[in-house]
Length: 446
Ligand code: SF4
Ligand code: SF4
Image (cartoon, rainbow, N blue to C red; front, side, top):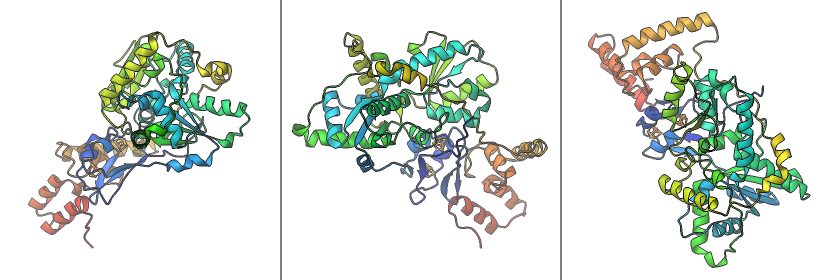
């Protein structure tokens, strides 16, 4: 089994901008954030890079790491691997041939749409489902935030993840092979995936189920969209429109909610939104859900158009993609996929290895000690007010109790407990003020 050395994260908090408002603490599906000394801190072993904290931060203190676009010029062959959601983001009056032309003008030497890889991936999933009848439901490997959520919160379900690559991974493998066959050395080809979300940046930096990604780099879609749009508006006359081949209609819709399920021939269910997914997986893990063969799960509402780096209006993007798919299915769908000529090679490269559980909460490695800590946790929880106000900097009273038994928190963080101690004369007003300041301002008594 492959063991990635760490969980790379694409999101980080800019402490100079954070005001400790706890919006992010309360929305995080894995309870990965605490406010300490007035600043949000993300716990690396719990974060799944879903991007919910980024969405809700009112002062934009949560940032996404990104590489400089100039890195593409380190490669003689510079491929922009774009998902169909990127095309769907543009206003109707801008044609796809112009978008391709603008990408070349920016410096890419080749543009390739990710969803050409859907045919190979869909065939791989179908055969995986039929060869693994003893495991139900099987869970799509498409969304990296969902994969991490399962690793961290539902380790018993890791074996349910379909061990088949995503369309962007298989398309990246194709691009590499194609240029190798044209006589280029592997290190001369740069394959840059344009990502709609932070989870795919994180998955590229610490891949799950494979030793190394076939990608060279990942580019923030919102950043690239703005670059391309400004070229189109400012230099339209000098853009050379490019002929292109659209992916098939089912490929264009693959990243949408229900995109995978609509191609499925078994009993399949699609769920979008990380909190809805968590609710469903809770029920699945406790044996309340039966009879489903396949689960498509997208951490973002509406699938990739809802990604934090897609920008723009999610629903307009969905509508654009559906219209493009409809045009494809109305007669323009006759071209053979470029990947067709490499089908055998790519089918052989389509598998992932097992996904390893990575539990984000271990009270203790030793069973006896873990049991004692669990008992202590329950007792502390009974003392706490149980209103989950987050004034302590933790998302819930349960999570504060957990922090306390793990020596990462203190009961004095709870303002209600502090008030009680103050009223009982157990602490002084100055102590109570110091406790509050340690959560909210970082000014701790000498
Ligand atoms: S990216 Fe998601 S899991 Fe990570 S800290 Fe933000 S909300 Fe929590
Ligand atoms: S949402 Fe989180 S990161 Fe943003 S200001 Fe509030 S506490 Fe800080």
